[in-house]
Length: 248
Image 1 (cartoon, helix red, strand yellow):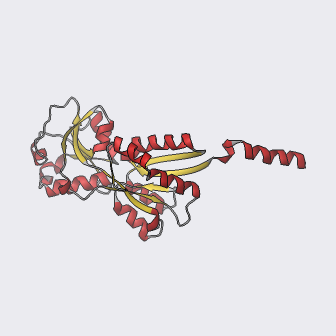
Image 2: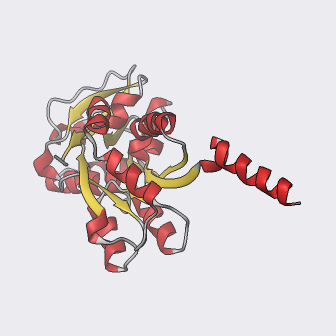
Image 3: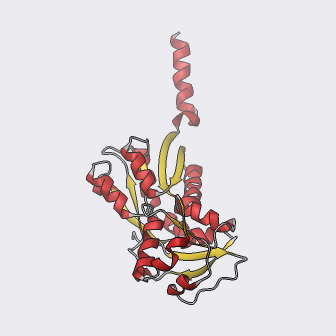
């Protein structure tokens, strides 16, 4: 029996599959392409398996509060990170404002719609304008812009909602909505849409993506991934995806 047990211990120590550590990241849907790419790079270099789940930052924050398992939270709105900090799900020293993004108006690539200013959106012959719900970051920023540009009343009856930025993108990509408001990085990821106008940044709150470790005692594996996502190598990938990196 001792011989069998010793052999089992030897097998555990020599087989890299047994050494893998699972890390769960939940992230804003607008990070889907770039973060998936970074995770593949990291998994290739390290003996670790990382799970990814994408949705609206608001929905993800609620899931964390309800006890969903996650090691890192990558939000598209600082508001939700601060809420989780206030309720001690995240420690301030384990969170950093890593990225920024831009907001754009998009249409299907076959659309004849044109914009010369953002305010002119209210005068376009739209049947539908797809936006995120006001609780989602992309919806929050979009509603801010419509109100500050004083065109909300002109488009309010045409607004339909997607759960998050990627749902909005999909509506427009399938030509099921005449126009939509998404992040620039979303628009760049989808060849079926085109950008009609980049919304001036003074019309909405700054788009900030905080990266945070969840819990008071994050694992060493989670800490290492957290540091990688703040590294120069990750910065290059984020910038290729269209993000602005805020962390030095």
